[in-house]
Length: 130
Image (cartoon, rainbow, N blue to C red; front, side):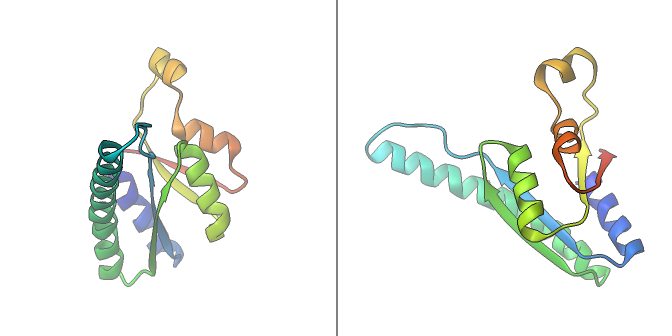
């Protein structure tokens, strides 16, 4: 959220629109029967509630600054693909995202969403240290 707030300030300086995006992991349990259906619905409800809560905070901040705000929630197994596909479909000319600041061996083993988006994006990427 701290990085999102910095991105909103940048958008205000540029007179730009803000697109808030949440990428949700799909439900991973591949069971059968009622338990699978219930689990999938519960997972979806919790994920959507979380997304709506956070996007709502951004919307209120943008509304207070009179910035146009749009939001989307997408489901994708890969956060990187979700971000890049949304950028293309929405026609965004800049991606702003936060970095947890993970470094060293941890970043090498786990990888970094920010690094991968930087490497694969066709538009500029602004990485904000959260």
